[in-house]
Length: 143
Image (cartoon, rainbow, N blue to C red; front, side, top):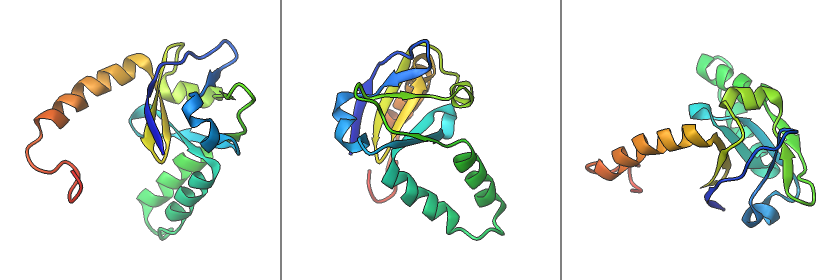
C-alpha cells in the first residue's frame, strides 16, 4: 500500500526519484498515466493491469467508458525504475499535469499520484477544508 506525501524534484531529463518506501512495490515496473484533477497516476504494473481490465469490462456502448479508456490507456507509459528508483515522465504527461521542477508525490493506497507542488497545495487547501467541515459520511459506508 502506498502512503505518505513526499517532495521530490524533477531533474533536467524529466526524471523523478520515487520514494524509498515504494521501492519494493515498484521494483517490477510501473505504469503512469493521466489522472483526475490534472495529476498523474502511477501504478505498480500488476495493479495497472487490474484497473485497465475493470475499465475494459464496461460495455463499449458506454461513451463515458470509451472516453475514459482512451484517456487512461492512450497516455500510459510503462517502465522499470533504475537502481536509484528513477523513472522518466514523458513530455506529454508532464504537460498534462503542468509539472515543473517542484513536485508532490502522494501515496494513495493502490497508486501513487504525482502533482505539481503548487497545484497540490491549492487542491489540498480546498479539499482539506471540505473534508474537515463535512457533516455526515464523506465516503458512504466507510468514513
